[in-house]
Image (cartoon, rainbow, N blue to C red; front, side, top):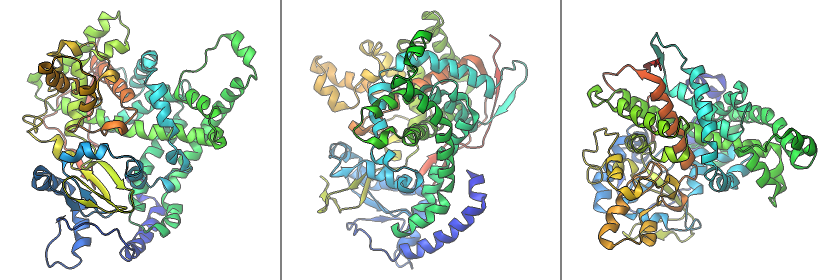
Length: 552
């Protein structure tokens, strides 16, 4: 990311950015309600602009104040931000927020604005019509069991290449950089299959795009709308380069598969006995062939859909596992967390005769809890469940806050995740915080993650046990890594929760299991801190750990 910022075309971007900021102040704005503005100082010149700058630099303090002073008292406030001021609604309104229809409070619009997808994607239709979301829901989640062996096979090959196989010497590795590559390879084993998932140029393009999008969006957001097309010619140049490279490498495979589906060489393929690929690309090609939209069959569109899921998978999973590694390696060695996790993984795979299965993964309660705890503490977003008001007349929240048309609303996720009321001793890392509770409920021990309730209301609607046991069952049923709730939303919450979270959970549990079974770690005296970059909390990006291959 630093290399991108140092390249010549970013100098031009900064010049345009300065001009954009001048114009930005002169544009008509949505009139926000009369609420407390955080980080403003009475009597200060340019108080709102300076509050926006302050909130960008010390966002952690702003979101903490929003939660402690306002949200916990069922009150709303406004955080002034360079890229757009935001109404912070109290967490008590989460259920109300997620129940609003898309034409009232939009989920898609904040994401598109945050990533500036009209400019950071070559074909914005990929985001405007996210058909790949349905492919993930209907195909990827359903195929997780069949894909488990492929994922573990690719993890083994990737770890051998990236972390090495030396059982004698300690090696220093950067978790963020190495996990990014390992996850890119493993995810693409599911997205495009062998041998493309190991194609260095394709992986470089996918990782490059995943890195370039947030950089470009940060630089584009301060510009007034009419200047963004011009600014994007410079700022989004890396995005276009990576997209074209990715499409160029994937297009021949798309065309080959299309020919087979059209019957060309079909008999030959049948005689050879080569089964139809079971990966995201193949599902997307089949879905595109049935689509009423001709552009969906364009190889460039298909390739960019694969690139879009690369973007989502690489960032979220890399952040999650990087946090988990540093949390575990910096924990008190006397707690023996790694040994406990190693024993859990070893016993489960041994029970299945050395083969990893979907059912076996569902029994990894401690690994699941470890990932959930690191995601709780290190959640990427300070404010989450963001929505944009789409009704022209605006909308009034149950606590009386009027949210005008075009305004953005969210809740203080970071505050919720660190509240001792919901998480006793919340500031302390406890990887088995959730598994202890889940393991105490025998009814949940054989339930697959995707069959767990996604929210409390759904559980209450379908739960048939006696009322005395219902609340306890509901509480424990919502403690898996993928289960969202009003007090846990790294994946969002409700019907718009991340559709790929089940794949991410399986991939990360397999990764964690392989890593701790095959490598030992030199303990860290102190965990390197995660850092706030604007409104986002990111794990250590350059810090390292020392590892060595275990002798098995």
